[in-house]
Amino acid sequence: MAATASPGDGRMDGKPRTSPKSVKFLFGGLAGMGATVFVQPLDLVKNRMQLSGEGAKTREYKTSFHALTSILKAEGLKGIYTGLSAGLLRQATYTTTRLGIYTVLFERLTGADGTPPGFLLKALIGMTAGATGAFVGTPAEVALIRMTADGRLPADQRRGYKNVFNALIRIAREEGVPTLWRGCIPTMARAVVVNAAQLASYSQSKQFLLDSGYFYDNILCHFCASMISGLVTTAASMPVDIVKTRIQNMRMIDGKPEYKNGLDVLMKVVRYEGFFSLWKGFTPYYARLGPHTVLTFIFLEQMNKAYKRLFLSG
Image 1: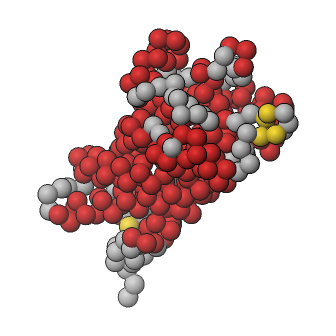
Image 2: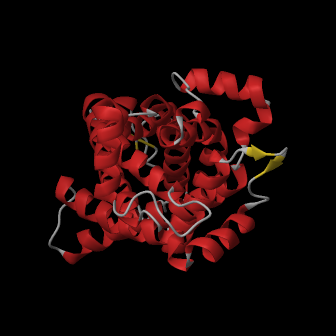
């Protein structure tokens, strides 16, 4: 006879109760937003370094520390949090969608006996979730890139967006609604790479650490798995990320865009700035991605545990 349980005992038809899909999406967004509050200065430095020396071998910033100190000197403490509103909206849209979809698909593809999906399937789930989230979050991404890049421009060339909503309204009004999705293809391509690497490597790293017998399912395990995941993701996604950054920040010159497409960006970066410039800003990228990955998953795991303790335990 099939196992059947009442709603109050935490199991239905032999399967453990889980939080509703809406809660999964909400927690995903909140986790990403919470992490962004801590790492926004690193995101700013990463974007500035990726735009540094555009079209030439000379660079505005020698190192990440030089970039950070230069920004603090020129724009003050408040300057390193430029674009925070766009970063938060990006997480509210992009991260909510990608982590929500990833969590739902992961649970659906987990075996009845609790066996998790294999590595390749995890990667496929991550890529699907990432591409979908990137499309939803591209407008906020465009605003974020432009707002964080504004301070490096001469005063008469700055866009001067007051906040993310002002940026979105002005972009739509001044350049047309389609501009909000400028760079959508490289943004989605980056998301595919990031999520295939980040989400799959996080799950795989966590599983490996737990199987080693030296770790338990706690914050230390989540931290170590996240740092491994962040390193893998940084190395894999930086070339695509610089394409996205350059395209979303580009201006029209004599009625023509600075870059034709993502391949044109790659060719010009390699030709004028050197092959390893594709990994320009590696340190702030990892310094931002590593902690952001750590904080996002820690916040997510803790919110899920709290929800299960408060609403699903019986």
